[in-house]
Amino acid sequence: MSLDYQFPKSFWWGSAASATQTEGSKNGTSGETIWDEWFKEEPNRFFEGVGPDKTSDFYNRYKEDIKNMKDIGHNTFRMSISWARLIPGGKGKVNQEAVEFYNAVIDELLANDIEPFVNLFHFDMPLEMQEKGGWENREVIDAFVTYAETAFELFADRVETWFTFNEPIVPVEGGYLYDFHYPNVIDAKRAIQVAYNTIIAHAKVVELYHKNYNNKIGIILNLTPSYPRSNHPADLKASRICDLFFNRSFLDPTVKGEFPKDLVTLLEEYGQLPETRQGDAELLKNNTVDLLGVNYYQPRRVKAKEHLPNPYSPFMPEWFFDNYEMAGRKMNQYRGWEIYEKGIYDIMIDLKENYGNIESFISENGMGVQNEERFIKDGRIEDDYRIEFIKEHLKWLHRAIEEGCNVKGYHLWTFVDNWSWMNAYKNRYGFFSLDLKTQERTAKKSALWYAEVSKNNGFND
Ligand code: BGP
Image (cartoon, rainbow, N blue to C red; front, side, top):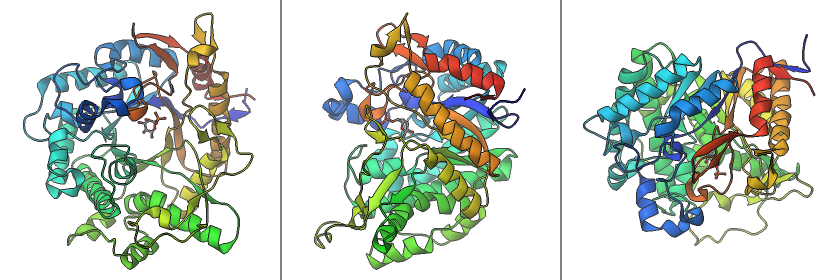
């Protein structure tokens, strides 16, 4: 029997999470990250004053979570290793307790036929590394490469799919442009240096991996199509520049091995080029990724600027476009994000046509909803809105596959409702709901639905 939406054999059904958001910073021995520090300094900036010490306790409950993953048909799961836990302080001695923990998690996943996808950096800079200047300092890049080397030596015998970074542009935006990550700097020139150095760090780790190992290494990018308001040349130009800043800045160097010429020209014109070193261009050219993770939540809509930017104001990407709220757009009113399912297809077609149809998968997609207890019926959250959300995105993904896009899987953000940075527990994304007081997990309706989808490798609609 064939289904309306049948996915290719061995399609990756799973979900994603990250170390800081799930492990609990006070569980076991660990160094501190910028999140521990920022929470100490400004607890008021975190939703309801909840910090990274109060998580879903994966550190102690991974067995239960992995059993639940198995029960709902996961064949893959993306996690991250905490650099600060594995090597407290960011460099020096390896923490044996962390080695045991990650070994146990990896082994438990494999014993349940779930392939671990392991990511090395998910917004969680060790505090001491940030004190040295974070990604602005090339010494931190060296420490990151050593950390990666250690992780490969310890775990690459069993982990066959690696990622260097999750959404590396987010710490740039949050930490150096828009004030939603530590160190809360607002300075485009420094932001661009941080972005550049992150890409160098990434390429060095790819180089190291390819030298010593035969499996796959990739990067996870949040790709956000920039749709222009109209076909007027000024709107088109605004969307093209926006795309350069927020998508192609990381996509081109990691997949094609070079920065987009137009981006370089623009930054040069405004005196914003980062400091580079001899050999950087060659490093990028020779170390492109094997696999691309695509995080997609919402599109971006832009229009030409209504007013010229004040030339005395500090340089910002927003000098070149205004955001545009399209009338009639469909909204996830809880998170305040537009829902535009076709975006997932447009990204895939772009990768097919302009990025050599690189092997990819949806590494995050999901719907954050506040106060989901409202939807409890007989003890279970009936999240039909989430089922609808996933289904509509999968339909477009299916169409992309039919049109020859090289996309291998779909991971929901996230498995169990987790701590989410400044938003803490405001928006819940999980297949399983979490009672933060008792740590009890309960499958939402979407989890049961997804189990069927995974079992049948598709669905009818
Ligand atoms: C992505 C991140 C995740 C997670 C998710 C939801 O950008 O990779 O770590 O936080 O967004 O975010 P939020 O809680 O802000 O809605």
